[in-house]
Length: 331
Ligand SMILES: Nc1ncnc2c1ncn2[C@@H]1O[C@H](COP(=O)(O)OP(=O)(O)OP(=O)(O)O)[C@@H](O)[C@H]1O
Image 1 (cartoon, protein in one colour):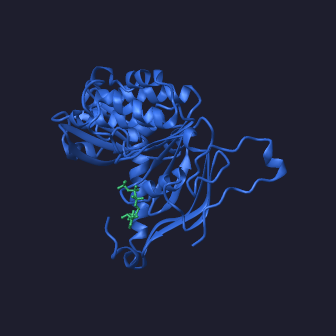
Image 2 (cartoon, helix red, strand yellow):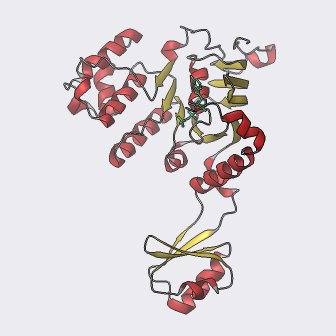
Image 3 (cartoon, helix red, strand yellow):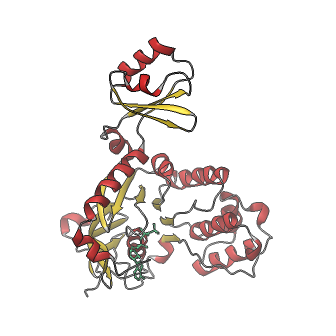
């Protein structure tokens, strides 16, 4: 098992600042389970980078390796040009980490907890109130951590990752326990951090979030990077069907299916859904038959790209060889 080492630099490379994170050919195995298989990616400074993938794809393992919390079996990782493993104390003030199981000083009040975290990093006390404000916890500052709601604790975990003003922030499903308004509020906080030039590595299962926030995303499937690109390019390159939604009762299913250009007709959530790759032609036919009042159209988004890609790759991975690889290890 080889150590993860700092990236070698050549004289030509020395002039350019190192990327925020550089992962090259990283693999990691837990027993028989290949959690990461030859993963390479580069995250630029100031980039908002999303890490997506189904449960068990290897996202947390990859993030923990980038954070220096876990050692890769092989490959190299560099954070601002330095190896995060073994524990690199020079990187600590530059990196903020929120995990799915963040630890708290539960007997402290929210602001005391954050003050303790700030002190550990040598951050100024003034940062405490500003960070509580940024994550929307000012009103809860005097509440004991153990009495905070799940979503409020989540926000405190995020505040703990931000309070020392790190340049690189790892957020692992930060909106998992947040209500819709708190989620949108956090988006604004994150956009503010991005505007300040900070780099954000963001793990999420919310595709709308990745589409709205991330400059680039990587989709991990079965421990390998299936694709890395901007949400815009991924959606643009995906030739998906457009869905036309008609109020029920407007057209019969058979009548709709007979319209030239309609690929599939289903009934979903009170609508007759027509899938087509010739939206203009079908819309004009629907217009002639029933008018377009109340007709909605939906084009493909990142979620469609993600579902298509992960379904295809997961299907192709479910060969006898893959099954043999995975039967012994459950999360
Ligand atoms: N400490 C461990 N020991 C054994 N197997 C592990 C360990 N940690 C993770 N695994 C396995 O490695 C694979 C990748 O897990 P990982 O947690 O990195 O995936 P993930 O993409 O973060 O999943 P999720 O979206 O569910 O959080 C899974 O099959 C998981 O069961």
